[in-house]
Image (tube, rainbow over all chains, first blue to last red; front, side, top):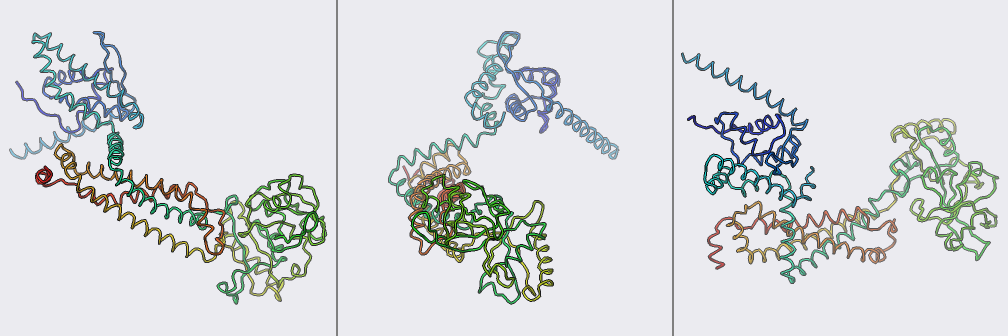
Length: 114
Length: 474
């Protein structure tokens, strides 16, 4: 089994925004989905999930409503606000740029060593 | 949601937080059970995965951004409780502070009324005083020069940047109706009230055509004189009144506390009706001049314009006007030499307040020694030094503010006697009142005092050597 890695600083917000962008979802489902989608590579710290959700809600990037789940229980469903969507787009773009740049640098050093 | 809504709905948010986390745990547990785990074991694993519901809750509360306010309220309640538990200490400290801040507030009330309050006219910052000026005149010795009546008329006609009006001190004996009495009269230009932006209480201002020699004699009464002489009877308007043997028709009543150059005149008559010799000579300067800057005009423009007009007059009337000019300056209340006295007194009472603060600080320090164990206990339970300093400062701010409130009460009672005991007459004495400026000052001063005397005990809060403190106190 692969070793799980911790999330780099600041990426949890981005991942949450992305998952919530797919449709209204409650906290537990966010944790589940993050874990599934990353194929277990990323360890989602459940303890920091809720503070992060509340912080995003306070900043107006997420909105929340209490709705019934399929099993008939009330749960807090988060959804993306317009502000959240813009934030997701800019953050995703800058993340993309970052990995490309890091990838380039890594390739360069390998070439130099040979 | 704004932060105060978050604070207001704290209860509800706590409930929702609890509910949300419970949902998470239940969901996780039931999933584990579905995978064949023992229910108890499933619940345990779910809790472990979340990492402690209480810790998560605490983090979520921090995210709300209202933490400081909640702490503040907590500290505030605690401060009140500790003060109530030590009535002797509280009384001594409060009395000291009340006296200190009361004296400061009284002094500031006088200072504010005499020096800071704007003149009671409309847009007083657009009003200017116009004085005569010659190079040989020493303003320091003789005071400001007034203006010749004809010069005023020329300036009024020529100036585009100023709406100018003049006034002249005079007196007279009012005969009919009633007992003859000397009245303090001002002869004023017809636009005086409109330029100052002061509406009359009753009746009307002078008309332009009444402001010239030979026009029908009309008079406006000062509010106090009207109250005194006519007992505030409204039919006074339209009555006739004999002043210096001449019959005048009353056309208006000035509003209460209307002051011109620091005094409340008894009566006003049109300046232009005065036919005395001093009105017709350009080398006599009896008329005081105030003016309002026209919309868009600046003080510099007005100065330049009047300098130009002065130059023209000097060419035209070299005998009387050579070397004579005009100075335009912002209109300020004339308070004479009281200014420096007031500064001195304000400085003195501030020192008094400082002494009061030092006394309270030493009381607090003495109390801090006896509270060392309590503070050490808090440190042992995980309070940071910053948190303790905040708690101590909240306590002293509560003391300071309550002292300030008592001080304002003292000032409200003491201000009238103080003004009456003032040696000589205090200029603008009836402007000396407690207003929002005074309240703001009192609050600021008492908070500052609270910080000042609270800082020493706060910084003393025991953070190191906990062990000794506990042992010594045991």
